[in-house]
Figure (cartoon, one colour):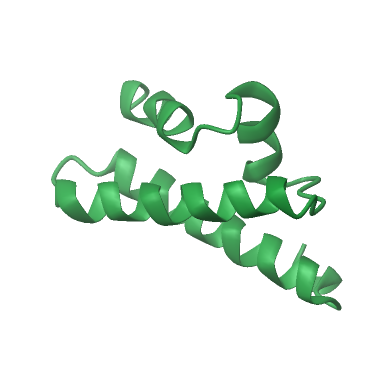
Amino acid sequence: MRANINTVENAFVYIADCNLATVTYLALLKRKTKSEYKRQINIAQIMVDCIQKFQLNPEGTRAESIIKDYNGSVKDWSKQDEENK
């Protein structure tokens, strides 16, 4: 995706995907600060909400899966990683 950053839309979707990667990383940690984990989920949720609100194209990113498979819920999506550690 990084090579395709040539618009503000692409940049926003890329940054959202990076934040979602952080959520995945934190979910897999055995010892994590729960408040930081929740904060990152909240940030990611705002980004996914904006992707939907402004009808940005999240194709090929974690946001695409969240929107399609988890009804746009980052919290529900993050539970898969918590359960798989």
